[in-house]
Amino acid sequence: MRKRIIPLLFIVISFLTLKGNAQECPTLISPLDGATDVPVDNLIEWTAVDGIIGYLVSLGTTPGGGEIINRRSSGLNNFYQPEVGLPSNTVVYVTISLFLPDAPIKVCPLKIFTTETITTPPNVQG
Image (cartoon, rainbow, N blue to C red):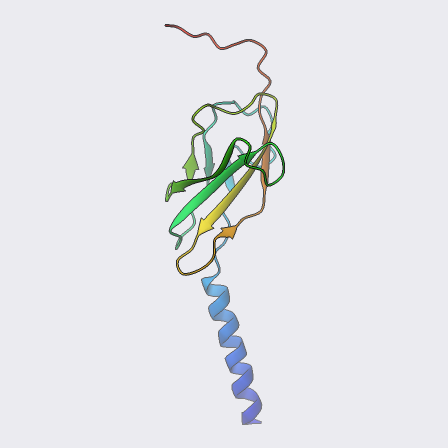
């Protein structure tokens, strides 16, 4: 009986250790996943994840794409502000990846939102 308990105990402890070290993916909080009419100058923001050493952000017009920005580091900041804004009336696919200490980069599931339609150019004062 004792011989069976030791291997089982080892398996349970190993599982709990691996589960405890697993990093959860962040939640998109601005804009919300699935949002519509998002302003083209919107800040992209997600929940912070503990225990990481950085984030990579990709924004694309295709699932998993990086047509807008491709694997741009935001350091430990849990936000990214696109420098030139986002395209109008476009579904934007967001991929956030996590830099983990002593582990491969973890790519999190896609999130999406749709930007607003801009019919008139913004009023620029010079």
